[in-house]
Length: 105
Image (cartoon, rainbow, N blue to C red; front, side, top):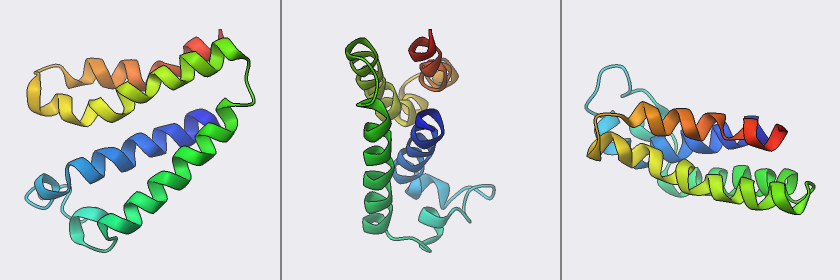
């Protein structure tokens, strides 16, 4: 559940960061935030709900897992920006989406 919710939060953050760029790209211009079907404010409320659900799962774990899970937030937020500053954004994406494997170990 936590991986599902946090993957969704990562997608929401990505779409929020990229809304202006997504409007200019044929493949992404119909995304709800880019197209204006969902406002920035509503997207932020949805993101808050996703993060709250993720936090609910996280706090049910042991202390080590809570710290490890909380550290993943930096990757979740930074990934969309890596597309602007590096030629290897997929490296950060891979780390972000596979962080949950550390929690399961």
